[in-house]
Structures are given as structure tokens and as C-alpha cells.
Image (cartoon, rainbow, N blue to C red):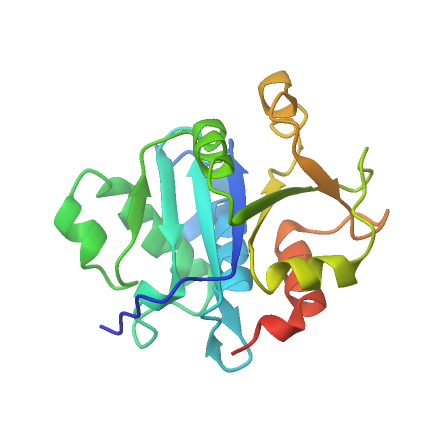
Length: 211
């Protein structure tokens, strides 16, 4: 297994309130899992690029029912990591089923996956205390808009950028608890994008992050 201890430069946070694997079947992953395939698509968009793993980008998925999981490409096994969203969805199902098995979390076909005990709200509060982190909320119609992509690029040279994508209905990022965090908002335009597409656009605009 390839493990690199260097730090990533960009993190995506996703909140998934719909995933429910109680009636999971591989024959109908989207319908039987609460769209676990959408989560898989987001993970692939975050950690992969045209050449393999994007070692500068990681993603943390917070499942309402199952807790959080961090996917850091520097600790994943590229050879056995599923490159297809349905295969990755099935791997995520097994990860969730074995979430209380520390050995499985550290040694599974995807690589080493860190479990996050906190909710996203608590995780953000803890992360805000670290000066090297800058957190943004990606919204179609932000109340506060950062000046330009160029400003983001300058910030990313010596700061760790964290983007919160929320969930499909945006009910989480519009909640009172979330709004009380007073995070900066940023928009990629008024057009509605899939979460996975948003991540690709962010990475495209921050292209200089490549090693």
C-alpha cells in the first residue's frame, strides 16, 4: 500500500442525509442505498485526475446515519481502489458495514480510511481554530462572494482551503446551526451543478495546485 505523509492543500466536505444501506442490494445501488452512488461520484471527482490520484486533494463524507470518513489519496491504494462509481459504491457499503472494525478501516481494498467521530458542525468548529485553514461554502446564490478566483489561488499558496458542498437539497447548509458558523460563501455562477461537477470546477480553477 502506498502511503505518503505529506499534507493535502484542498479539502472538500460533503454532508449526506439520504444514504441508508438497510435495504442495500448491488442490483439496485441508487434505489436501495439512498444514492450512495452520488457519494461515490463525488469521491472520484475529488481524489482522481487524468493521471491517477490527485495527491493535493482529499474529501470527507459525513453520513447522517453512519458518521464521517476521510479519503486522503496519500493513504489510498491506487491499484485496488475502485475507479467506477458503482464498484466504489459497493466498496463504500462494505466500509460502512465494517465501520466499527478498526482493522478493516486501516486495511481494506481502498486503502486506509480514517473515521471521523464528530459531526460536520463539530468538525468545522474544530477546524476553524487552526489558522492555516480557510473554509468556504459553495452556494449558487451566496450572500457573501469572494472577490475572485485569483484571490483563491493566492490564498491556496500558503493556506489550506476547505470547501463545503453540502447535500443535494441544501437543507443542511441552510440550517440555523450551520449558518451560525458564519462561514464565507463562494459561487461558481448561478447555474446549478452536480456536486461532483462543482468539485471538478473548483479543481480546474485552482489548477496550479498540481504537483
